[in-house]
Image (cartoon, rainbow, N blue to C red; front, top):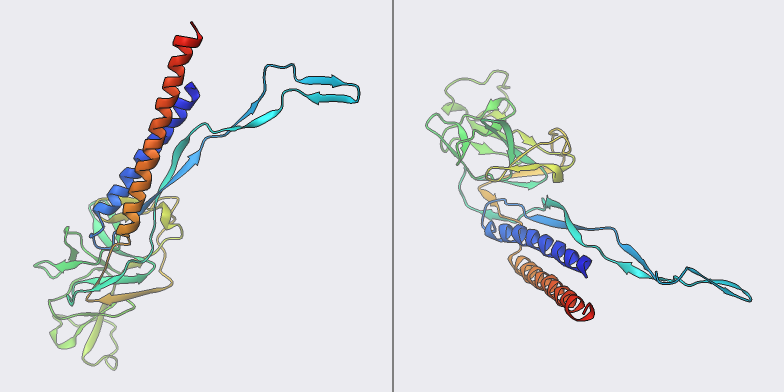
Length: 276
């Protein structure tokens, strides 16, 4: 009975953790490129139940038999094993804003922060007074040649991430640019897009940012990716599925709560009635 109280309590703690994750997913359903989290549980090792009031072996004329038979298994509780992020593609929403970029496929934009490079899926960008392409939090967007500098209404982002501007509006010529290529346009840089072999081990940080870890491995070039200008990626949270999950969690929590109450009542009877 005491073991049943501990088992029920572990279930309540685990369901509370899942409820927190589910509520956070629903709270961010309208956040651009938000990726939902999923809670994974792990059961404690089961205990084998056997009859213990007999000596274990019974003798008969034809041999012997086991008087301590195997009764079954007893669950000893559950715990949260992992909370990981699901990076499934979110739907694309047209905005017609040239500073909005959406990733279709695997990969992340690279931005520079005070703590170093970080990775985001949110492509809602803007530019500052110096012409630097930035996030709305003030973090510069990185290209393969460093910080990206552009002018308003003077750039196009191709599907492969190349940033193209009109040649006659360039303040300085681009070194190495082939004069016979793109007579009216010049590729000034290419978005620095990163991918990881084990994305589920990326660490969430700040607002919609991720940082690499030893488990995720270093940043790698993406294999299958398209960039859409004038679009934003929506979150991959399904509101209906999230509400169903909340109901299931609430019912599981209540079931564990009732199991503790039942065990407590039975223990009370054992002490007050059977013991007396």
